[in-house]
Length: 207
View 1 (cartoon, helix red, strand yellow):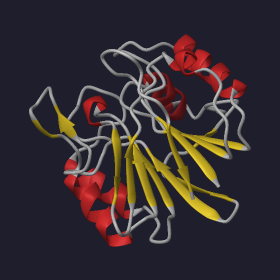
View 2 (cartoon, one colour):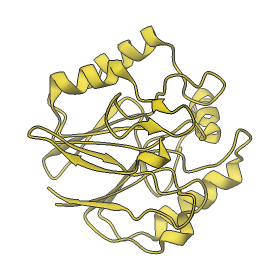
View 3 (cartoon, one colour):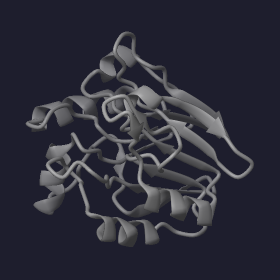
């Protein structure tokens, strides 16, 4: 199974062109800015519809206020050209995916939760998940922020991932820590596309 992973496209999705594989994962921040509009989300959705995959899964990030508004208003579908996951599982060709958007620290942004609420959300991640999609990184893994000059991931998420040991854990959020780390248990991917100069390329995993 060819998995193609992106995140943090922030309205620059068109620069990636047409991608191809079995399943495309978008780890949040389709939109850009505190005042991101519904039009931004619709443009990203149209781009998703052009991609060549059997299935596309997407979660939200802290810039995705249009998604948060739709969720809070109980309006569906969130996306027409992808399956939106929020604390939900999806099984594709026998592989169990789970998507969850929540972030620590940034209280004025979308999908922020306090520590106790984060613990409760991470506890909902199934023990048998194969591919975990979050927006925030786990603390200490591909999460060093140039802005804070410190790790910016979530320790409670790191604790949960250590318990369940998914085959793949993909995320974004901290753009400057784009990359991949393979451990004995888990492949960790920070798939943040937007960079200071050229865009980072999607990360491809053959599972």
